[in-house]
Amino acid sequence: MSFGAFGGRRDLMDRFDPTRPDHWRHAGTFNNNVLTMAAGVAGLDQVFTAEVCEDLNARGDRLRTALNDAFERTDGPMQATGLGSLLTIHAITGR
Image (cartoon, rainbow, N blue to C red):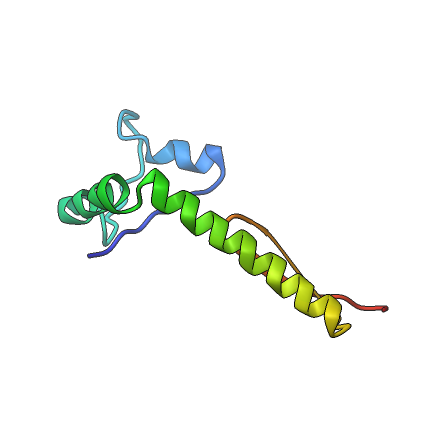
């Protein structure tokens, strides 16, 4: 199953509005893939529940804390930042 999306400046995206008589057509690979959309909805409704999301974000927070503790203990020139399950590790220069 696949999913695709595209975007851009409002003035360009407005040209894809099918209600316009001069609209641009887009014959995308993933257009109207009903099976993919149904799987996405089921995944968000039945698999990725609020409880799963909270657990995932808490695990991400714990990982960031553990990494930053390790960087500090070893005087590693790194820092982990992010929110919830999002994580980025940055090199710190000039230490």
